[in-house]
Image (tube, rainbow, N blue to C red; front, side, top):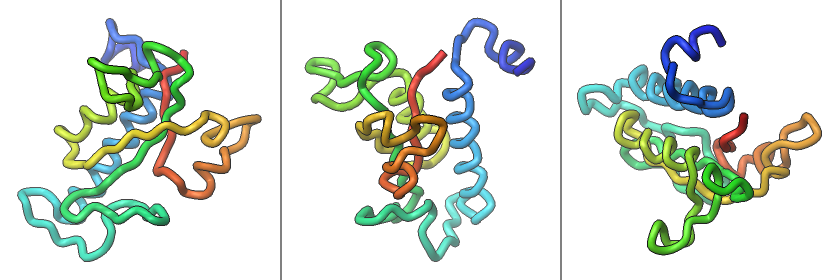
Length: 139
């Protein structure tokens, strides 16, 4: 926690957002360890944890994250002209920004927070592997 303010003195990111960024950096590290650097792809299997009914990425990991849409400005459903009724907010923006720096294919979907986490336990949606992870802005 002491480093958060040292590196990001003017940015107010929640612990959840910082953890999300760290997790994405780990995904990038996994790709580097598998030989994905310098364009030499050597992985013969899926590059990400499998989700039932979802084809894995062909040339880079396909990561599917979920967020609720109940906290406007931070997590909401975008409407035209901003977006075509897709999830939006800071979590979505950070996830989509990772595509350009981590060689990942990111998808953000809507999921009620209770399917991610509730009553100090992992929600059924996350537990059953409907998505790779859940995210939102909190403070």
